[in-house]
Image (cartoon, rainbow, N blue to C red; front, side, top):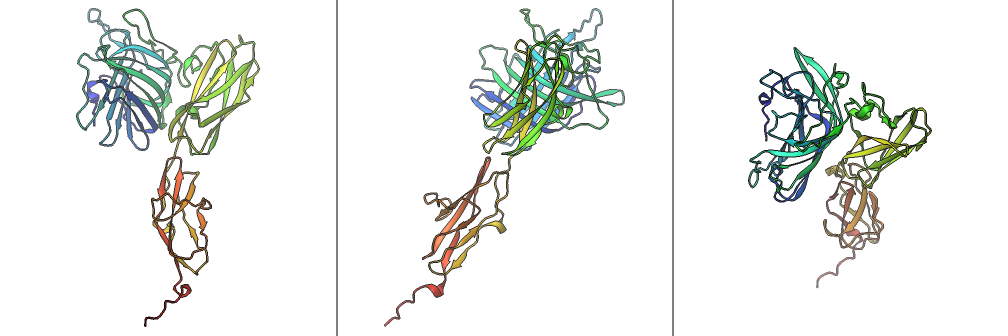
Length: 451
């Protein structure tokens, strides 16, 4: 596994923690030397992979300016190390004995990231390492990495450990690109979604209330990143921020700090509020979009009159075909001129079908010309569908039109016949054992005696 030495980072201790749910998806084009360079897309998620995170202050103090993540996968897949740091709001200056001060990581876009730039002001740090055990380890960039990343939502809490401040990551939705500083190197791109468990005794961290200097990076050509220093729900609508100038969706804390667990063909509702500035004089429309065609979301009511705060509810529905894993539902409030958005995260849980030995269909014997009653009992995430076949297990040439339920009645049996059933749900299928239906010996015609 790729190991990050915490001792390499000065400042407060990092609380290494595991999430309640997390997912990482990245695409590594052919020729990419930051990742595997296979031209493939890799997907990791809990509970199948082990995620670990740490948040600390890179140079000491009380701002969560550095995050790292490790992903432990199977031996056949890459093992991942991700690290992000905010820009230096106040650079180190040995002549004036000025201590470097990093800005806190908050919602926004960080540009011109360089892995080797911790002593340069206004340039954030990013590192991505994907190690492949087979056939050969990945190649690291000789001159360091460069890229950008966007934090769509983030929230931290803090606890005290002696004189140190421990930061705990509760919620993160981040997309990123990274490549070797050689511009000819293809860019690796990805997205990380992370939900941490609440920590007893922890209090919310708000960069505005903490008086932290927020900086999103300035490039050598003068261009810069952008963002908002709000805490919690993010943006200017966060605790301690200035009043928003656009209609702003305010989600409950539970929707900010944890993903909604759902199964296929399920529904969930989340109540939220929309703050409407006094400058807004037109109706505010509320819309919901998702990252998958078979994940549905609707808002009621869909229009709020100007003035004050309006309450609404979003209903999220999975279908039988919704893929398992992390999904995002984006809520948007717009008055026709300006708008704002907020994200709700959904984890679709799907257990493949399973047939235990005692629940397998069983061999049986019937009288000549009589049907047989067969049954199977399967577990797994719904909806479960059934298809019975005649013949040996795995042969799908002879599907039975009437065999689409766990209980199946055969046609009249005149000779020994084999049957099996396939059980399917959105995340897989399982085949039962082959069972034999025999004709009772007393019902078979007597053979002629030998002469």
